Amino acid sequence: MGDHHTWAAAPAAAERARSVLAAAWSCAVTAEGGREEFVGAHTVTEGGRVLLDLPEDSFLHTAALCAPRGEPSAVLEFADVAPVPVRSRIRARLWLAGWFAADDGHLVFRPTRVVLRQPSGAVVVGLDEFAAAGPDPLAAAEARLLTHLADCHGDAVERLTRLVGADSLHGAVRVRPLAVDRHGLTLRIERARTHGDVRLPFHAPADDVAQLTERMHVLLAQAGAAGCPRALQRQRTDGDG
Image (tube, rainbow, N blue to C red):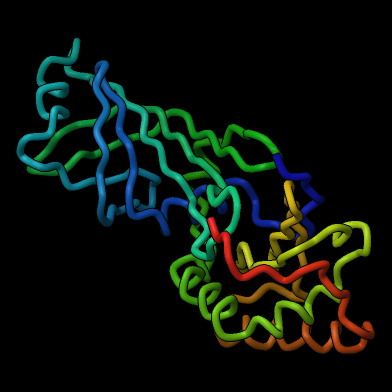
């Protein structure tokens, strides 16, 4: 288990939950004692309902027909996976419990309970907050942005470690970009047997990729003013996972 640091200027739980939904390309549905994995896009309505395409042979058709009083219940589970290979790639899990209907090839799901679990712990998200929130504006582009940063700008990532406290870097062998949202960048610091996350908040929220570019330039300028980069014990390029 890695150690965890306070995340400054982090997204609210409802926004984080909607971001997980916006970026996820798969989910698991458990209903009436059965479980089914779905791969592909899904839709979230403004009111927070989730729409999934149902294959003709899905057991959920039968579950909907056989449910008492015609009100089948289900739990949807979404995993937020870091796009850059790191240890413990699951950044968050989102569970939605509620009722569903199988209608014209679609599963229409109405949540009655929303639980978001992050490294800092689990939190129940209010239904009104969940329905009113939107995903982070960078959620759809995050995977591309982080992959580009890790693959093409390793020097910039290393430079940003100048903004990380010496205690957090003690014993570090590799630093990778773990997450980015409009509020800041999170770095995963890997040691020989443990890991920890450090948040680098932006000076102001970034509402699009152009603003994100400016915020990153500010962080790099701050890192440049911080002095020499903190050397890692050994920068590993193998053993991703």
